[in-house]
Amino acid sequence: MKTRIAVILVAVLFLQGCGLKFWYNRLDWVVPWYVDDFVELTEPQEQRLEDLLVRQTQWHRQQELPKYVAFLEVVRQDITDGTVVENYYLRRLQMSSFYETLVAQMAPQLSQLMISLNESQMESLLKNLKEQDQDLLKERAEESAEERVEQIYQNIKDSIEDWTGRLTTEQRQVVKQWASKIEDTTQLRMAYRQEWREAVLIEYQLAKVDDNHRAFEDLIINADQFQSSQLKQAYRQNAVTGEQYISEIFSMLTDKQRKRLVYRIDQYIEDFNDLINDQ
Image (cartoon, rainbow, N blue to C red):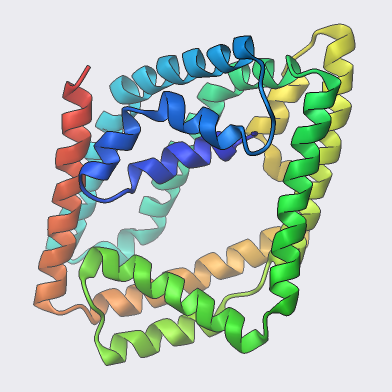
């Protein structure tokens, strides 16, 4: 489970149209369904997870969604004022803080739920997480360098076009250059996840003895403590590369694409406001 539950919450926030509101209001059954792929919970544990999600979704609706609305309104103003490039780094930090706040809020209850797993459940959870990573490693090993770059290109292109509409030929060429510059972090990320899983098992065993959840919470909140210096450097470099190419692509947007971008932002603002009022 870990921060994967928080990832689901973030992913739901960026679904298109009515999908966002539909799935946001049903997280209490979407997340347990996802978790079931990794570990089979008992009925009391499932109820505990559902209760956790109901409470945290209500907190998120009241406390965080208004911040998202304010953030998007500022981004929209950046577009109007032509200050997207100069404010890009600050906006990226703000988005990261939203995720960190979400993880920190959920960590205490999530850690209690994970510690409530019996040994067989914890073994199953860690085993399934490991197998998922091994499957990804196998896929990457079977890919050529050209195939990897093409997949990255398609992912970036699709993400941008969701906001701007179809990219021009020149813009797609810039995205291809961007994709070719991204460092592959697969091996480093898998090593990081393996270290995290090993730490989870140790802290789980200790918590079962002394009933101290603080160290386990720290594994959820500060999971990046297990990232190697090489992985952190690769992340930083990819972020710098991303900022460079996003700035270039933004400068190339047509009037039609800019209008589409503002329209998409307004859609999210409207959806978030609807969710805030739907209490």
